[in-house]
Length: 185
Image (tube, rainbow, N blue to C red; front, side):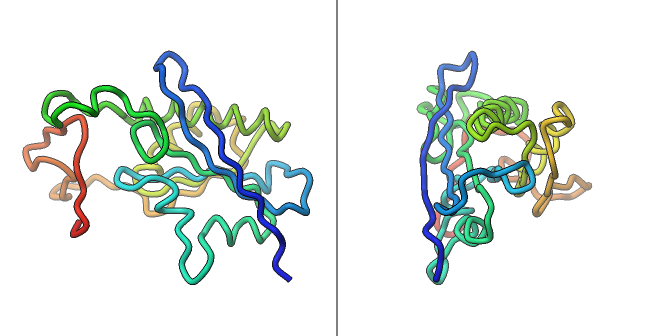
């Protein structure tokens, strides 16, 4: 029999930004406490929010579901401006009216707020981190700044920079405040 999975949703403030960060948590209902080795935060890349990446059911179960069924306390977060997290006001204007609003440094601050939330909620000092694509740079940056709060770090499909690497924005290298993504992309 498949264990019951509890799904919970939370929001926590991003300090000094006036924004709230959305988190989703999945865990088995029959496990009361999770230590650092079984607590995992997953962060998405630059295109899609966490729910579309980590909690999209395929053939009945998502990646989060599989991990929760295996006994993990699984957390995902939407970076500011993505999914269910608050959007900075600069995202309401034309893309070329501002520079990128959510930088890696801003995203690391959001991860810091979420990690502190999870640590307090679970009563643990450390947890596991997983970053996908741009999320690898974010999670690696967080780990560099806060190694004592990280149990293990997993980098899934990490970014790389080599000469001739295609960009996600304007070929001239100028990035706007945001970029649209169509179904074909």
